[in-house]
Amino acid sequence: EAQVTQNPRYLITVTGKKLTVTCSQNMNHEYMSWYRQDPGLGLRQIYYSMNVEVTDKGDVPEGYKVSRKEKRNFPLILESPSPNQTSLYFCASRDYPTDTQYFGPGTRLTVL
Amino acid sequence: DAKTTQPNSMESNEEEPVHLPCNHSTISGTDYIHWYRQLPSQGPEYVIHGLTSNVNNRMASLAIAEDRKSSTLILHRATLRDAAVYYCILRHNFGNEKLTFGTGTRLTIIP
Image (cartoon, rainbow over all chains, first blue to last red; front, side, top):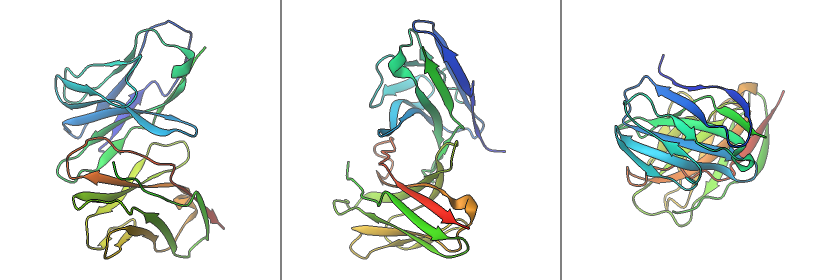
């Protein structure tokens, strides 16, 4: 089944404790991205990647890092999480040429 | 990016058609109109997209005005599973890779 998976689905952590949210897709898509969703602000893009070893900032990249060493994986790294990073995070990959984006199930992160 | 305007919420009876409107008066000639929906506790899901002509797929139909300044997503026979937030999004053809989500329309289906 074609899908985007994220882990963990839920995470509660404390300020400053480094964490990684993994994202994997099995559709051989070149483009992947991360979004965060907050009440009243909608979905905002954090980082995206056009292909392996090619990443770029989205609208709200501060406090986040990403890497793209393999086509299928695109982890999101919070090196020193802060409470304002409490949010619902979605990973997505894009199909070419249909331009359809496929989203993962989401990771709900709480930073205390 | 060109913006879209949608009603905040709509209600519809189960098993009846639903017409979800979207205004995009500043659309450019290269903008595709995409629709996504987000079911409760899930990630956004692609519904349909089009450029100028009306489009149909297994989930819905997209009716695009002749001047392209508005469009309508049509769910032909709404079910309870169609209750979701529906987003109308404009995208340049493989230009900006980002999806810019607005606040969308929250669709409630009445049994």
